[in-house]
Image 1 (cartoon, rainbow, N blue to C red):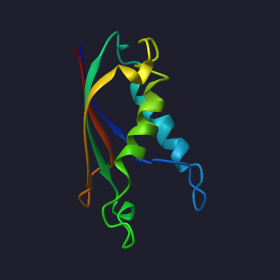
Image 2: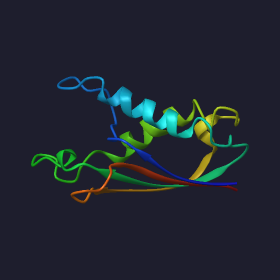
Image 3: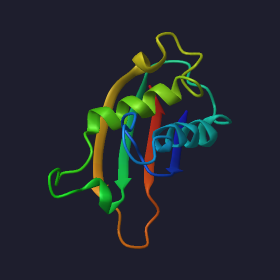
Length: 119
């Protein structure tokens, strides 16, 4: 099985303590909505992720953007409720992971491209 999907939204890695505190939860809900009707994983998988982040995720004091490990953690936690819900160990089924991030172009949609292959 192969899944190739772009999940639109603004990727978040953790709960926000200032500003729009519901933004991280909206990102989780975007992931769930985009993947709830996809086939369920049955075994080990490889995953290729590309996060497309808005410019404000690259502030002067954090010029390389959001931490990849935290972006992946929120994504996998949400996938545990959908496509990974039935596989033993849920996101433990990810045995290969390639992740990158980049700043969105001016008119480009933000989110994450996820390519998943069952092994």
